Length: 101
Image 1: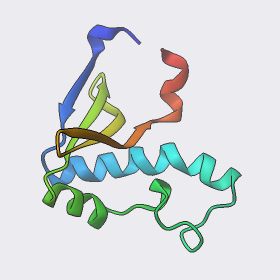
Image 2: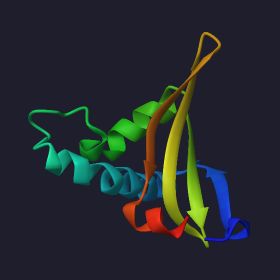
Image 3: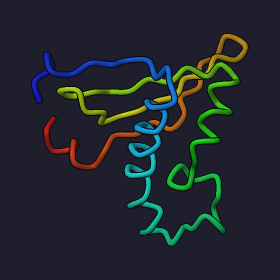
């Protein structure tokens, strides 16, 4: 991956949230399966998040960003500021992109 083909963009609309949801779920599902995590025994795991949860985060003014390579989203992060402290949530990179760096 050449850095000039990579960009970070803020996630601003529902279509981008849907794309981000796929990145989040895909990047967390492998470990969830290896640890036998399910939606029933670990509902807060990002592998089991849903569009409604992302919308709630947006409503709380948590900013979301996607990492894009040649127009395809390959990463995601949500950043929340609370009392001058920044929290990083749902940091995700798709597995197929790991070897390209």
